Each structure stands twice: as C-alpha cells, then as structure tokens.
Amino acid sequence: MTEFQYAGVTSEGKPCQGSVRAPDADTARLRLMGQGITPVRISSDAGSDAPSAGGARGLGLKRKDVLLFTREMAHLKQANMPLDRALSMLKETADNERLQTFIGKVEESVRAGKSLHQSLLPFENDLGRQYLVLVRAGETSGSLHVVLKELTVQLEADDKLRNYIISSMTYPVILLVVAVLSVIMLLAFVVPQFREIFDSMGDALPYATRLVVQFSDLIRSRWMELLLVSTLALYGFSRWAATPSGRLQIDRALLAVPLLGVVLRNLQFAMYFRTFGILLQRGIPMVDALKIAIDALTNTVLRTDLEPLVETVKTGKRLSSGFGLRHFHKTSTPQLIRVAEETGQLDATLLALADRYEEEGRRTMGRVLAALEPLIIIILGMVVAFIIISILGGVLSINDTI
Image 1: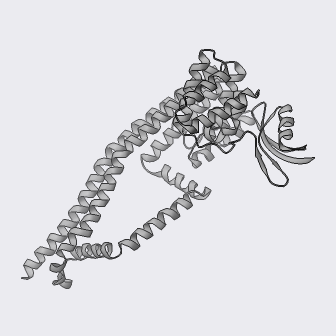
Image 2: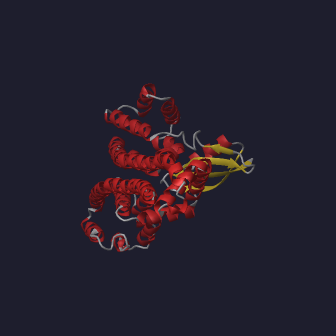
Image 3: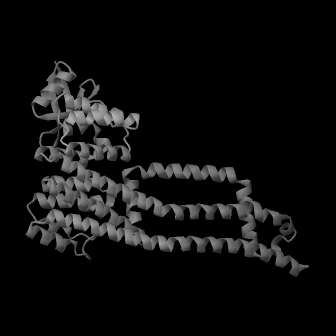
C-alpha cells in the first residue's frame, strides 16, 4: 500500500487536500471519488505526480475557444440534447485540434459517469474558477443551459471590452512609435549631413546645435550598444514585473497615473461587481462569491484592498460596512449596497454597479485618448522643431562668423 497526497474539490466546491492509502493512483482516485472528493492532483511520497484527468495544467485554450465551446453548449443544452451527445457533436465541428482535444477529454469524463463540472475541473487554468463554480451551480439547480447563456454573455462582454481597449490604444501606440522613429531618423541620417560644416566652427557653434550633433554621433557610433542595453533593460524589467513585489509596485504606479488610473480602477471594479452579482444570482454563498470575485481582479493593489471584505462578511457584519474603502468613500456605492441589502436586491444592484463603472471607464478612456493623440503630436513637433532650429542656428552662426 502506498500513501498518496492529493489536492481536490469537495462536493460543495471547496478545495481540500490530504492523504489516502491505496495500491496505485487509480485506486486512490476511485476511493476519493467515493468520498465525494474530485481529485485534481494525486502524488505518491516518491514525488511522482498523477493528474486526475490528464491536462490538469491546461491545454492553452484561447478565449475564442472557450467562448465558442460555451456558446454552442448553451444552444445544444437549450434544445434538451444529452450532454454526451452534445459534446460529441461539438468535437466533430471544432475548428482546431486544441479545442478538439479539450472537448474529447471532457466527453470521455462525462461518458465515465462524471458531471460536466467534474469533467471541466482539470482545465481550471484555461476556464477560470468562476466558470467552474457557475457550471456547478447550473447543474445543481437544473438550469445548466441558463448558466451557459450567462457565461456566454459575460465572455462576449469581456471580449468586447478587451477589443475596445486594444482598438482604442492602437492608433496612439502607432503614433508614438512613428514619433520615436522619426526623431531617430533625423538624428541618424539628416544631422550628419551638416557635420562637415559644423566641424569647422568648433566651440563657436550654439549650445543647442552642439547638443544635437553629440546625440547624433552617439546614435551613429553606439547604436549596437544602445540596442543591447535597451534589450537587457526590457528583459530585466519584465523579470522584475513578474515578481510579486514588482507587480505590486507597477499596479500601484498605474493607479496613480492621472486619468489612466481612473480608467483602470473603473474597469477593474466593473469586472469585480459583475462577477460578484452573477455568482449571487446563481445561489453561490456570499463568502465564496466574494473570494471568486476578488480572484477576478488583475490589479494586485485593488485585490489586496478588497480582501478584508471576506473577513467582514465572515464575522457577520453587513457587506456595505466593508465598503468604506478609499476607492469608494467619495462614491454612492456603499449606500447603494446598503439599500440593496435591505431590499434583497443585492445581485441586481451589483450588476447595475458593474454597468455603471464600465460606462464611466469607457467615458474616461475616451477623454484620455482625446488628449493623448494631440499630446503625442505636440511633443513630436517640439522635438523635431528643436532639431531643425538647432541645425538652422548652426548654419546662421556660420554666416555671422563669415
């Protein structure tokens, strides 16, 4: 008999871990399932891991794959199609091998007698904890097709917001890149054409002209070193940003940026309240819903600030009493949540708050972009004008000397 260490999920959806004695990993898995525990990872004392259903680390599913799977499953389940048949049909119509593999593994687990929630557990890294919790709630309440529809709407909304941010930032980023390249081209190819003329002047050149010429010489003679240093700096920054302390400092700095910090904060709160509201609508306990909603936040500073809400609710206090945070003290959010608690409309109020924060985020982003584009053009114009005026100043100083 070998003692296996396991990590899994109870029938109530709570994570658990411990040990079980069995002759092999498969027997250990069966014993755990008999106890109402769905194993996610099983390993022996020797250190060999045995994932519960293959692919526990995820298949690298893209968001469009998850959206396609959820949307089609919602349609098929609404038509009262059996789960295994629906999965078989989806596997045949999947448009890429990655999605076919995912659906195939889920179908195999379902045909083995597991629920859809249990079959999706090994793919938590791809789907997210909120997705799995809602699927479990839908199966428990007998409204799986309704939950899948809600997940489809949320995934589409998240995808639409992400595409909006990307499309909104594309032009300013292109403009910034063109501005930087334009300045580099001027310094690397235009300024050197006047070098022979300026060399005869020596220290008699204006200071601005000498400064531009020195920058030009630096770019032409040290471009490989500059490129290497820039690459190493970006690599070091990315490694530092991946650490918990680096991520925390970057998130704090982003929130402190004028206007941009407001946009990020509003969009994060929109995601938080929408997740929280949907979970409450599906009957998830408030403490669990709070934890999952906090996990949905990508900004570590906001996540840290909102974590005390879990303890507030655990101690029996009202949820609204924990919203006296610096992020909400100048808003009506705490009052709206307090009224919603008294009237029993908390889930609807949270979803309304999500829509309001998202709308405010979009509106503020529009103002940021409206100011960013002319700002980049003005800065580019000032830099180019400085270079041209410096060159003209050097030429005029030569005429004055002559």
